Image (cartoon, rainbow, N blue to C red; front, side):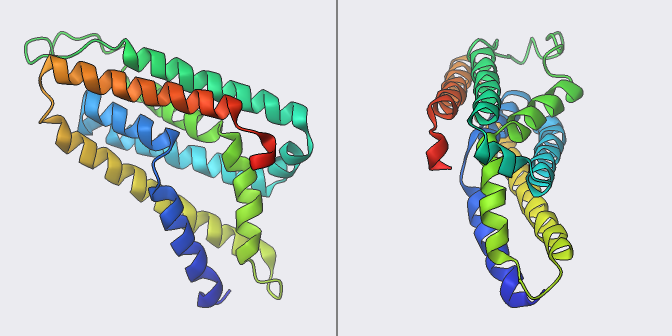
Length: 211
């Protein structure tokens, strides 16, 4: 693979991952609500979710989904329902005060649970599966072996997506210091929840032909 094939892919991927979507909304919401200590968990969930989606696409799942309206619809509705579920939970999340921080219930903020949420939101996005199948081949050099190129492209995208998610998490965690007020936290939770619900509704209404 030459630099002329890799560099356009890297630039296009960097632009794409920087655009806020459901995954970024989830990362920012957790960072605002719980601070920097959960940045690594959400980032790891995003990275594994992207890896799952890309690998499944490269193995042919994306092609199957593109050809099968039934499979596409099933995955679309599962992903959409999960986004709406997370949005409702964030909307109803209790606000934290300095006095209640130590005694707060952490059943919904365990690292494993947050990791699983980030993974599910990323991996269950049918648009990502279709996108990788349509996007990656455009940069493959037909005169070189395809598998090594796919591995390099996948690794490149994963690194960029991981750094992007971690950057959003750190920025949101830093901004969290400015939103200590319960009133502001409530607004942040409900805004983030509304955005996640909206993303879920958009995913449910997104037409297969728009992939």
